[in-house]
Image 1 (cartoon, rainbow over the protein chains, first blue to last red):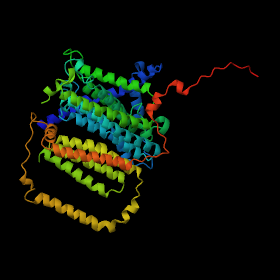
Image 2 (cartoon, rainbow over the protein chains, first blue to last red):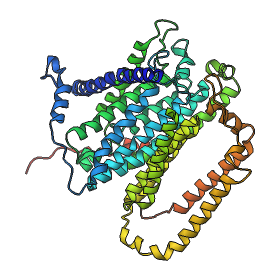
Image 3 (cartoon, rainbow over the protein chains, first blue to last red):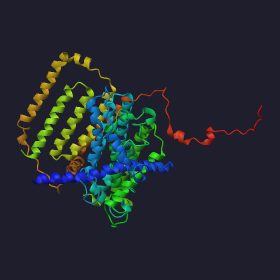
Image 4 (cartoon, each protein chain N blue to C red):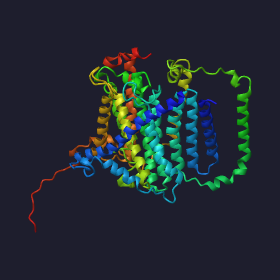
Length: 338
Length: 202
């Protein structure tokens, strides 16, 4: 009986996280078009509903009613599982994100590792989609995406090592609690290079512009999802935007103090988490409207020759600073780590 | 049967099935995907053992990185299945020999006195207040097993250097960019503004 109640409450909590998330994804697509529109001095979609607020639903219903076409020479089973393989990790990673103090689905001790594992599994959707389509363009997109994600995952992991050195914990809730006491204590300042590397690697990991060579409309049509239509295609977009929101939320949790208010003790709560996540999402859209797409070899150079050395050097710096108890940020670290 | 036992048998069944499919399925990409499924279910079983660090690292390292590169190679190679199956009978004795050796080793490990399952105490259930698995491993690795840990790290480093040295080829005909030089270029190095009087149209 207890197990039954536990299952039902957990399911209810999952719905409570997923439904707002999917709504956020829907309205993020609208926000993206509106923001980029105004950056390019256009209006953006404004026909469906009040000021275009019905646009996401119009898009979803259009895609729902379209036929899912499976190419004749495609590997049918993998072709249809690929969108699910990319969506499932994107949603599963939300289990450990702390929305406010104690507001998380699973208070896992190895939360940070779990998030890293889930983001790295997401690449299978892209690779399998590219291979199963049996098309050269899709395959090229998949290959590009695989190499890119493997490269940036290392930089991302190294950036997070700095965070866990400071916090002394892999638990995301504990990481936020370690940043309490006003915005001066956020890890953005002592770990500034790592925060930048993390966010940019996050953009690369989600295949967003300027790192969207996996899609690369101008070179390889639409990359890995050339052959997808209807709802299968929509699932890829759902996964991409869910991943975007997750990278933004993780940046907020690990470098911007999560639910903590910028002024110590001044109304901590979920609203700060949401504000910070929304701000990081705006940066995602801003990047897309600002930068041209990277060339492929330049992406590889940035990942391997710039980001990884930067993170390794900064981890060494953080290590020495913690050992010698330097300055305003590192002097308290050793005392708090048990 | 408790729920936990049910979950264990479920995952074990999936794992054995997918492990068997890895070697029986014809398409190499499908085989690689079955291997991914095997890793996943193995991680789930480790989670049941409360070894969350190992379980998540298995997914992170093997599923997230190693198998991606594996798939990368398998997809790029156009493996033709028919020639691979020709040598089946020829290599069968060797295969059987290796299989038998592995089986004997396993039986030896499981049934012999020193390695019997009964020889080991049932691990105690960790309480919520107890140290997490990750922290415990970290403490052991960096204190008691520091020497072994360092040796493993050195071996890995040598392997990285060797892999790069083996695969790196300098190709003189390839044109490289040096971004630092490109950034350093100034206007006066490349651009010459020529002043000349305008000419009448003839």
